[in-house]
Image 1 (cartoon, rainbow, N blue to C red):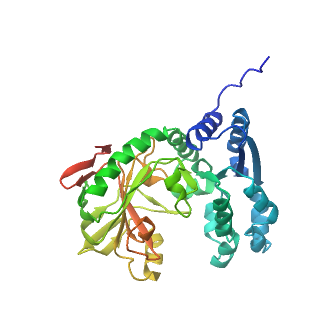
Image 2: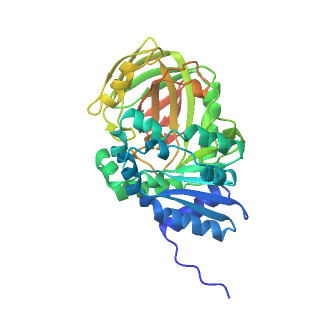
Image 3: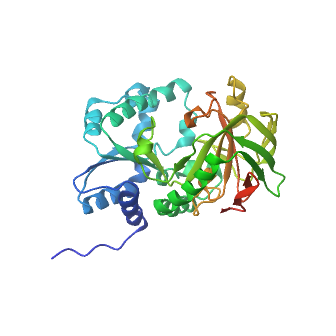
Length: 370
């Protein structure tokens, strides 16, 4: 007689949805779950649901306290190495789930650049092995909320996490349908006009580049990209490279820009004849200005346009650009989206609940998507 199923929890519902609908895990597949101390409840739920589906989970546990003890002990080179047994496990993995860590990103942001580079030196090697062996996976934002980071962002940790969970449960098919409709219009259109009652009045231009729809599933198209084998959840956006020579007007952000360990608010971008000529902020402006001042050619050119699709997010840390109807405009690099700008700088600002017109017809109006 089968044992009765335990009552569903948010962790179980989340795990079941991610595995079944986003990663489409099949019976017999090998699922690796890379988790840190603060994310263990979510890792346990993912492992349990994987077994329920007939898959075979393996949990890789990273201890937060042990990590920082190693950092202080000068063992960053060891931390950043992809050891043979880790490599062997990756070669035998079908599905990889990464629960963000270490949790204390504020502390991580204070590491000396050399130490930080050593800690994450394994990254390119990891992707090389994963690509070669056909791994598909996702980075799960549910593990991003952490006490020190919530404090730095000025948000309540549990409320942040709750939004992430709810947004991760949005059916990917719904995001795909809305995204493809927008992408078709963006590919065929030319002139963009973004406005908001806060004074935003910005004209941009498209250049016939193919938009990308991020809808929460690693499909064949995503696999063609260098890092496309790992998606991000929650998901939901359409992104396209802008004409790098056309931008005039002002953008007043009403959403924060969330960096890895802090945030910038009240961004004001002024463009003239295709260049960013002024960038001011209410707070956190150094997060933009410091790398901007060190950057080279192309840093001041319009980069990408992004339209968010996810109805469960609003000014949510690290996924502020996914909020339905939110419009992100960047400056700098866009070559990764088929643009012509290979700048080493990427800066952005987001307007929520504005109006975005394409060739005089609305794409977004007050957060609603046409």
